[in-house]
Length: 335
Image (cartoon, rainbow, N blue to C red; front, side):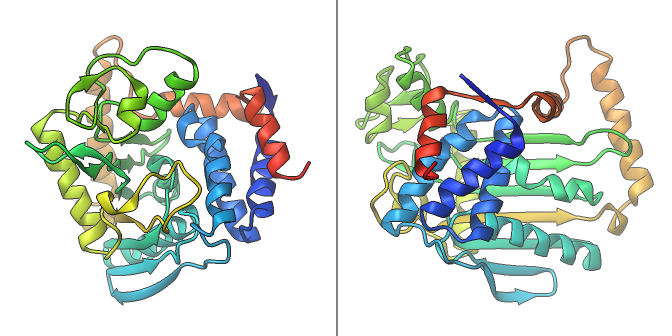
């Protein structure tokens, strides 16, 4: 393993993306969020994604010169066109728009169309909590979940995240996909030569399997909660695609290959200012009352605590990544 300081890893990831065709702004924003995910222990959404993104940039599947822009709006809502560039810039821009509208009107909603993979949603929402507001994020993804009763993957892992600021300590962060595991976790076990546990995925015919290849190629993943998770994935699909005009999950194709049509994912972000409702004093009192009740039971871990602790340690000690990945990043960066 290679231990790399966060600032140097950020610069390395940005250099690799820039050398593959990303604009300076696009490369810097993407690298910032990828390294933040690694720092929080979310390696499947960290710099391990850089080689894939570089492949997209080189093949034209992602446009390195894309600039996000508002294409439709009303006072509390807007649609951002990501221009088929990498996903982090459009999402950062959309969240800033939702925040500005929430500060003015109490609530703000921003959708992204022609987007791309945008990593860990909870990391993207951190500026919302820093401003004292509540944020919720949704994204679709390549098809992974069967329509209920069907045999073909139609719905994505469709992650959802929410962030709730606290008055004098780190925010609560809820961040999850709607499958038992992500494809990234299956790919990681496959690379390590480890078995895939039962109950994670199915083959192309809808049969349970522990064969990673059969899951990843034409197969599907189990939704959390069965029918309930599937219906929640459907709701997120419609929020991210029907409202924005983005590609539906079954129209995207695998994002793990360089060649192909633009990804065109959709994202949606909701920001709420407590001042427009019960007020910040009541909001913080209610949050802390619930947290205190939760912590009365020994062993309760608040959502986000592990992320915050790992990020603090990474800031001091750096981030460990596999040696082969470090070598690949240096090669992509031309170093």
